[in-house]
Length: 285
Image (cartoon, rainbow, N blue to C red):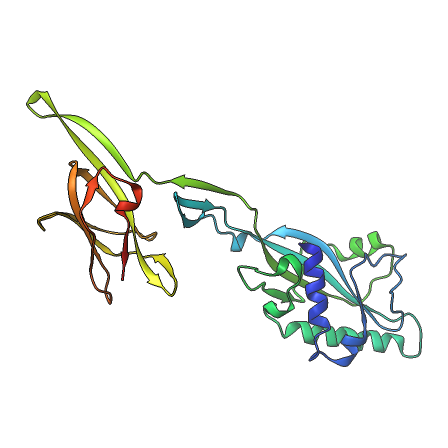
């Protein structure tokens, strides 16, 4: 992903609206040590990725829950990762070399500062589909880096530069499937009548509503369980995944009713309890 972030930043610098000097400059991501030679010796911008670390301030510890056919999937939220670049400009020869390097550095500073986050139209490769617009910070002081030791380790004299920090989201592709019990049967002894037992069923289903050509879960829908004759026995509301549960239902025939504000009420034909999983789902018109 980091190499695709490199290309994304190169797209930002080469944007048609950017200053011509930026668009004409060569962009590289090599380590700017004593052996570094810009591919474009006349004018070059170097973005050296010197540090990658998790942004704990933006960390979200809560798993992401998504409905699935068998229940719901819990997915670990993406990591938020700070990618820190050292931005320098280079011109090997020519009159006024230092002034032109400073001019190019100022233009890079100006242009990158225009983007508090990177727009999606610049994304490349695995950067496409980022769940959050990647925020940027330009020229923020890095207290963890000793400037003298840093330049000494590169083996070159100190140069004018600024930091660019881009925070990207990294999907760890870690999820687990949580199964939902649609119906369960329980036998229990009636109080005071130890010689008799009664069977009860816990049943659960979903309420859906139409959204174009597809059905989507309907949270906070009212659901009623009635006898075939129309006597209301239990009622409840669906959760955020559009799911409901009725406890302690005796085997037999029943009807389900469901409604949400703004849609007509839906009543199912008689269903058998216990029955098939799909019998307990209601789709609103």
